[in-house]
Each structure stands twice: as structure tokens, then as C-alpha cells.
Length: 213
Image (cartoon, rainbow, N blue to C red; front, side):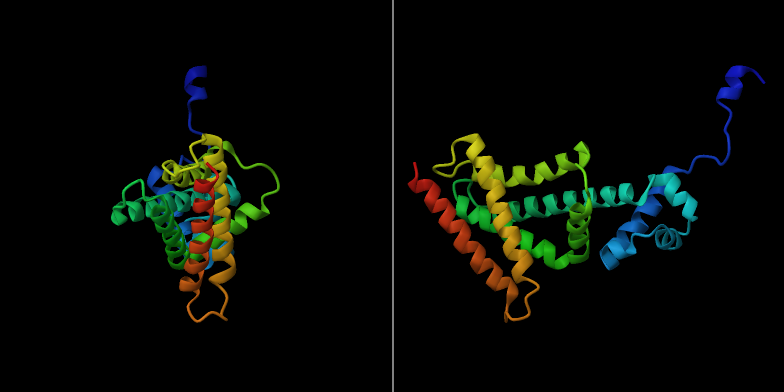
């Protein structure tokens, strides 16, 4: 055998087919939706996918890399959910208040219907010690861009930097209300309560921006 042939000779196990990776990712995604981060164990994923534990590590490197990939799917699903909500609402771009509230309601709906995935994403992000990979933060930034674009016609938010800061502030406020109110059993209707509180914050912010011109 020549040196060139030897260099390209397969060693050890053959590479796993792309469909096997998709199979493992689908199994892990189903477990994440059912059990959150508790389901993110190599042995559990392997059993659900019908693979060996070694195959899971061969495919994804480590479990954190696998979770990041699943979280990016969650982020993309989240963004698409919001885009579709805006499209269905059919509001003119000048209706900034109404369009922000459409995004807020879409946020509530996603968290309600995809709770395990969303909680897993937040828990994973909190436990990461260092900076997230660039490809991961880029996906997060795409979500903020949705709000930035909706705010663009708002009076008083013509400055790009101010509009970006405003988008992040409103996002944080909406997120905080959702996290505090939705799990609170003392409310008869947590979703309605959350939306009322979000309405107060969004309305006040947009009015204040317009008056500060």
C-alpha cells in the first residue's frame, strides 16, 4: 500500500451516516421537549435514538454542544413563531404599539406551548460560565432584531442605538413579567395578567419616547 493510500485508509469505525445524526438530534429534541435538561444524558438520548452512547459523543462531541444545537433550533422556531404572528396580525408598520403587543403575545404563547424547551434554553444559558460561541450569540441577536425592526417607525426612536437599547429593555421587561407571572398560581388567569402588565410597560415606554422628541 502506498503512503497516499495509507493516509486515506479508513481507520477504526466507519463514519456515521448523516441520517444517523438527524436521528440522534430528533431523539434529543423530543427528550428536551418532554423533560428539559433532565433528559439531556448521553445514555438516555442513545436509548431513544437506538444508538450506542459512543455514537452520541462521536456525533456531537459533548452534551453541551448537542444542547447548543437544540437551543439554536428553539431560537429559530421562536423567531419564526413571532414572524408568523406579525404576518397574521397584518398591522401597518406605523402601528408600533400594536405590533409590539403582537410580539409579546407570541412570546407568551411560545413559552406556554413549548415550556420545557424554553426553560431548558434559559437554564442552559444561565449555567454557562464563559462567553457563548459567536454562532450562538448571532442567533440571539436575530431575535432582538425582530423587535428593533418593529420599533423603527416609533416617534422618538429614530436613533439606531437608542432603538436597539429600547428593544433590549422592552424584551427584558416582557421576559421578566412572563417569568414571574405565568407560573404564579395566585392569579386566576396568569396569561391575561401578564398581558395586562406588558401592556402597561409597552404603552408607557412608547408614549414616553414620543413625548421626549
